[in-house]
Image 1 (cartoon, rainbow, N blue to C red):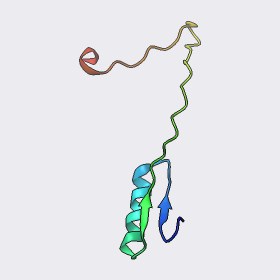
Image 2: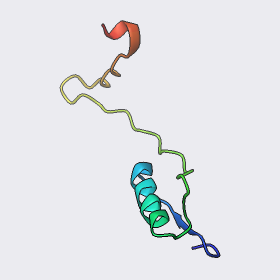
Image 3: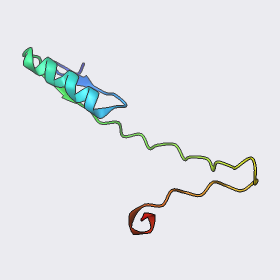
Length: 64
């Protein structure tokens, strides 16, 4: 809570927005603060059978 405002911070933005909307319907000044922390880098997954990394899923035109 900052002053008279209620700030919501959640990993799932849509959940925080729902909570804020519910508080606003009750007449409480509620706002959503998006999470600004960067996502951690993902490790390469190794295929235990081949010892090679899994291939990334293709997207776009090549996936068809």
